[in-house]
Length: 405
Image 1: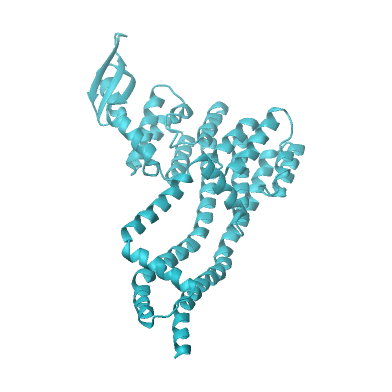
Image 2: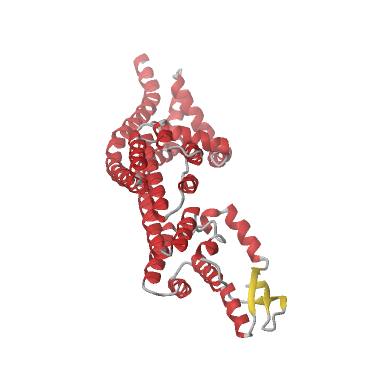
C-alpha cells in the first residue's frame, strides 16, 4: 500500500511525503527507525475506493459481532493481568485471522502509541465500534476501570447477540418453508400446468375462472420467462430498496409489531435489549440522558426509538422516565415501566433494569423454543389451502367433461 504522510524530523522540522508500506503501523515503525515521528497517514487511492465500496456493500466490510465480543473480553483480561494497552492490542492483532479486523486493531495501536485514549481511537472506526462500545470504554477510562468496563461491554454485547440469534433463528423455519413452497409452485406452473392445459384444449370445455388464472400465469412464465424473471427481480429489489427508505422503514416497523405471535416476541426482545443496554451504560457511569441517546441508536425499530427520544427529553427536564414507558404498553410491557419506577424510588435503576433484561431474555428464550411448534400447523394450513386450490382448479374441468359424457 502507498501512503501520503506527515511527519516530524528529529530536529523538529515538519515535512510531508509518500511511502510504500504494508500498513500504517509498519510505516510508523519505519519512520521511527529513521528518527522521525509520524503525525498522520492516508492511503493513496485505495482508501477512498475502500470507503465507497464498503458503503455500498456494508455487509462485506462488517466485522462479525462474535469477533468484537472476543476482542472486548481478551482486551479486558490482558489489561487486568497487567499488560499495557499497546502490548495487549499487539497480541490481539497477531492472533487475529480476520484481515479487516487485524487492520483495525493495528490502527488502534498506532493511535494509542501517539497518545490517544482507546475510546478516541475507536472513533476512527464508527462502522466497527458502536457508540455504546465507545461510551462505555470512555467511562471506564475516566473512572480508572477500563478492564471492568470492557468486560461489561463484552457481557452486554454477548447477551444482545444471543438474543438476536434466537429471534432470527425462530424466523428461519417459516422463511424456509414459504420459500420452498414458492419455488415448488413456480416449477409446477412451468412444467406441470402446460401438459394439463393441452388436455383442456383437446376437451374444448368451458374452464372455471380459477383455472383460467392458473393457466394464464403458466403461459406468462413459459412464453415470457425473461419478462417474468425481470419482474421478479424488480419486485425483490424494489421491496429491498424501499425498505431502506425512511417511509419504507416506518411502514415495515409498524407491520412487524402488529404481526401475530412475532409482534409480541419482537416487543419482549426490544424490552430486553433496551434494558440490558441502559443497565450496562448506567453501571459504567454514563449519565442517564446520554445513556438513553446511545441506547436509541442501537434500536432498529423507529417506534421504539420514538419512546426513547421522549424519555431523553423528559430526563433532560429533570423528570422521571418510568412514566414515558408506562404510556406505551403496546411497545414496552408494563413491567418495564414499573421496574423503572422502583429503580427511581430506590436509586438503583441499573440493577432494576438488569433484572428486567434477565426476565425478558429468559422469556424470549422460551418463546423462540415454542414458536416453531406454534407456527408449524399454521404453515401446514396455508400449504394445504394452496395445494387444494391448485388441485380443484385443475381437476374441476375434467370432472365437468366426464359429467357431460
